Image (cartoon, rainbow, N blue to C red; front, side, top):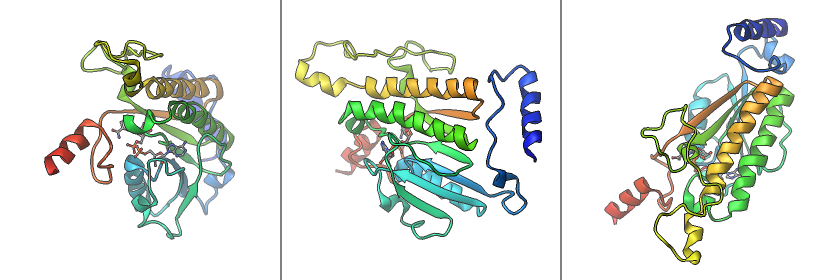
Length: 252
Ligand SMILES: NC(=O)c1ccc[n+]([C@@H]2O[C@H](COP(=O)([O-])OP(=O)(O)OC[C@H]3O[C@@H](n4cnc5c(N)ncnc54)[C@H](O)[C@@H]3O)[C@@H](O)[C@H]2O)c1
């Protein structure tokens, strides 16, 4: 498909009324449309050394037309999760913190970088919110520059302490931005820090807002997945969430 066809296609979708971006999507690299590179995808996975990210990398690597680039600062992830791909000609691993800009050429971005377990995201709340806000801004800037489609892994935590069960996408949530009364029973100030989770909840909410604003203002193609509690192989045994805690206790 040629560039003008992509724009025509977009205009067709826009006129169906289900697309409210102000602009057509940015033009992808001309290589995307060259015969030689026709079905090749260069895919960036941020946070690809983590639990979900490394499984996503396995899936993406199954397609021989994909080249996969992982950017990770190894805060909660590990090279071990990717050891079967290290050295593979279609795979590249970069030690990179998403709070810094990343200038590479890619066609798709899966933006997962962020600690997901409360133990880790509460360890340095300021860093957590920076990862969500500045990290997402950097990835959206990259998506805009290279015309890439971008997916953000958001979370059920955007619903906060929900008043609607089960949560539907149209529900806006009930998040306390300053964590002052997150817990209904009185607890000493020292322990308050263990309850603090707004750096994660609000961080992801801002990240979602940025995604939609870049979509509306710059025409970036976006996807958001609000993931609920997930468990499986490569999960950290000391993760601190309910499923791993139950399993660890049962094993002990
Ligand atoms: N696991 C779940 O149940 C769950 C639920 C909801 C949402 N999510 C979201 O899915 C994504 C992946 O979660 P996960 O369970 O694989 O977590 P994880 O902690 O195993 O993986 C996160 C990865 O991001 C990396 N990372 C963290 N901060 C970074 C930074 N500033 N720069 C670069 N890399 C950074 C970590 O080193 C790690 O490899 C996260 O965005 C998380 O918020 C997960």
